[in-house]
Length: 392
Image (tube, rainbow, N blue to C red; front, side, top):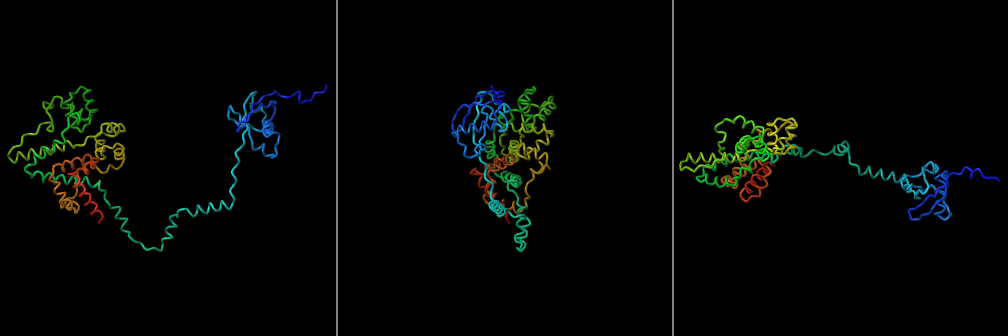
C-alpha cells in the first residue's frame, strides 16, 4: 500500500482555542508545523463562512497569544512560535494606518504656522525703524521705583524716634505706656523657645538660669550654654532681668518719671528683639555656616530659612546693620509724612509706637496693624504719601 510522504512526517496535532473580539469561539485542529499565516487563513475562512473575497483580509488580521499578550509571526510555524496544545489565540483586526496628508494640506498647515509665528527681533526692528522715539524716560523711572515694603522699615525706624520724643512730653505718658505695655505681657513659658529651654535643662542647668541665658542670647542654645558656663560662679547669675522685674512706682519728680519711661521703652524693645527660629538655625549651621552669620541671615530675612540660605550664599545685602538705619529726616518723603495731620495724631498714641516696633521685627504682622482701627489710618496715610511722591 502506498502512503503519502506528508502523512508519514506530519507533526503533532494541536487543538487551538480561537476567540474573536466579537465573542465568537471555536477549536481549530492543526499540526504543530503549520505556519501562523496558514492557521490565520483557516480561522478567517471559518469566521467568514468560507468566503475571503478580499485577499488583503489575511494581512489585515493578526493572531495574539492570550496568555502572554504576544503577537504571532506569520512566517513562523506554531512550534517555532511556542504554541502548545489547548492554547488560546485571539483573532483581531489590525488598526488601519492613518492616510498620509495630501501635499496641498501640508502646504496649508505650514503656511498657517508661518502666519501665526511671532516676529523675531530683526523683524521688529525693521518694522519700527521709521517710528519716532517717545517716552524714553519711562524705562529709567521704572528702575528707580522703590518698593514700599523695603522703604517702610526705614520710615518706621525714624518714626519710632519721633514718637518716643512726643510721648515723653505727655504728663500721662508713663500711665499710658503701662497700659499699652500690658498688651505685650506674656507668660515666660510662652516667650521662651521650648525646644531650646529643654535642651539646656536636660544638660543640668536650672530652668530659671536657662531662661535668663536664652533671653540674653536671642534664644541661641550654643551662646546661652557658653554664658551659663562663664557665669556659673557669678553671684548675680540668678538675679532676674530688668524686664522680669515689676515696674517701679511712679515718682512725682520729673526725673523719676523720665527714668521710668525710659525703662518702659527698653522693656518694649526687649520684647521685640529678634528671636531666630531654632530649627532653621540648626539646619543652616549643619550646612557649614557659623551661628552668628546664620542668626544675621534669619533676621534680615524674617526667619525664612530658604531666603536666609540664599542671602548667605549671595552678596549678603542688605546687611544686618542696614536694618537699623532710618530714612533721611530731611527728605521730602519724611517731611510730608510728619506734616500729615493723621500721622501727627497717631504718633501721640502709645499703641502706634507699639505697632511700629512690632512691624520692625515681625513684618508679616503689617496686615494686622493695617486693619486695626487706631493704627490702620496712620499706616494708610504713610502708604499713600509714599505712593504719591514715588510717582513724581
